[in-house]
Image (cartoon, rainbow over all chains, first blue to last red; front, side, top):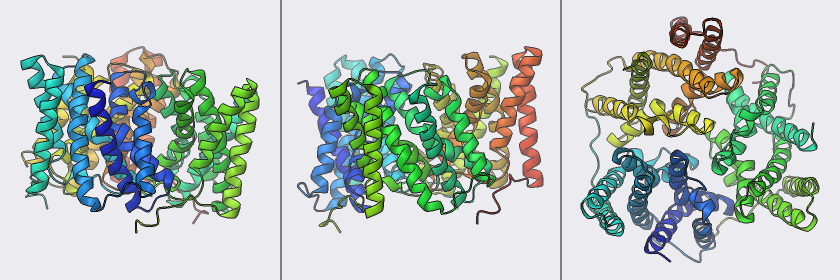
Length: 203
Length: 203
Length: 203
């Protein structure tokens, strides 16, 4: 079991929790929990694979991702795992998944031969798409489009991945450094309530 | 004209009705009727084909699906075909399309070389994705995520397809048995108002 | 720099403005501006490429599209470019992008070997999908499904492209004629407030 695989399962579970928690807030049934857990867990990576023509799609090739997400959905649904202060936890598990997925998405795109600009874009895509679909399915404007430094942290994660990989030629090092950096940026943003600027003259 | 093809046209028309009825409830114009009819009719199968890298996508290869859906949209729009008790009909045509599409989606995935877990997932995907997009386009939280035994019936349809195919090695038999079983489960759920459990401690 | 490329950049910028304006109405941050600008600018063409199995996707092959859309997002965000009467401008830039994208989408599909029916459908898909995703991300029912002659103009653009190409065998002529025709139809619809009929008996 590779280092990358362990990281991926952690990120998958973290994102699935965010989906299951969203489903519980909308009073969905168990199928809703499963779909909402799957969206952030595998949605972004699925779009990345489709855009790269990378087949089989990662969760078709290895069903671990799907099984982990569904186990999380069932555990949250039946209260086996209870996020007590739900919103706080949602924010932090989301931060972990975001940094991991952005780094891995950038990595996969580069390995698939895209240039660095597209690779960073697909890293951000991997990190944020599933959460956007989760929010849309809950009937809400996606949080990531208007609140706090989220996508910016994913963007920084991708840039740092490219920089460290270029400097060190060490993929695992680039993954660790960029994931930790992205998680730290996001954590600081949560703690100190950072927000991106919005247009002032536009009201 | 194969048995499978006739089944597919019935399922396509049934799903298209659900979309056209949704468009009429939202007071859309004729283009809205066409898009909303197309989404459930071809949306799920399109996502399945994209995820399987199966090209040309089924409705590009054979335009019958699109033509049937558009004819339904026009017929409902101009009142040639009038679903009198609209909501009841919506529920039953939806049930038929759901069972057919889940069975066919599972069939196609297996024929394309996926394992049974992914095949059942893609069967459910074929059955429910279009309806989810239809509901999102109407500005509503997808019905399938929170109300009644719908996706569960699609899931059962897929499982029964795999079981019957394994036991009999007869594809048409597996299609008939699993479609009838799925439609029956859904029909019982509608008649007796079955619902999936929702989390109790979570309010 | 080909004639087609210049047309494409104009259409991309026009569609990106519609997204950035939508983001400003929803009070999004700069990342929201970027995503909302990208959706109409590259969303429809991306779906067309995925459905045609056409890789690399156009904006992965050539990052100009993405760069233009992001520059527009930044310019609108910081007020460098200010759409004064915002809603009027939105409507006209949208009209230009719509006609251009419908013509180019039909062109690309035909060049990729589809029949004329599918080509016109994918032309319409190229023109309207991004705007639909933009509206959904803003939490609104997509404008194109219920208001005015929009998709119909895209449909006419595709039909005219096929007709002119068949008659003249001149791709650039077909692009110009069908784009001008589509823009004119849409412009007349805006000016004279044309709407598609809606069902009367259905209230």
